[in-house]
Amino acid sequence: GMSMGDLDNDGDLDIVVNNLNAASVLYENDLCGGSSLQVDLRWPGSANPYGMGSMLALHTSTGTYYRDLHASSGYLSGNPARIHFGFPSETVLLRLEIEWPDQQVTTINDFASNLFITVTR
Image (cartoon, rainbow, N blue to C red; front, side, top):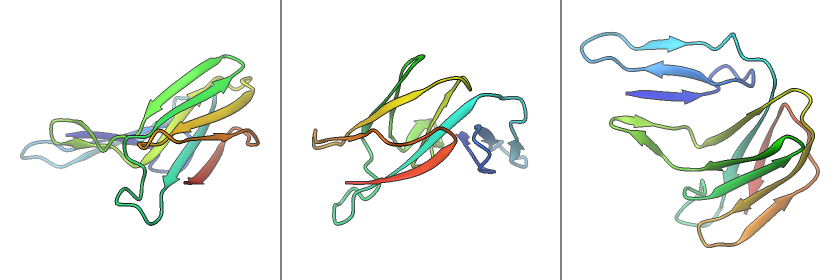
């Protein structure tokens, strides 16, 4: 099994590999440059407190980046509930759109790169 996430909170994705009949291995990413935005979703009072199934679109000066929030990523693998966007350093962030599983949309316009934000429904 394998999972990717920003385990050391430095803005890039690290990898954990669980090996069959062997020790797990952590690969820390020291190569990536650029910037990032990390997003945690919260939906208090619902049966889906992390907003699983949400679709996110980050509109930037270099294009639009899409992410879906889901718990699994393959056989015996999972993903953190935190969404990670990586993009070139010179990128200007325009807006973040979140479509929740009930099709309601939240738009965030005031934020900067290299941040960790929590969006509550």
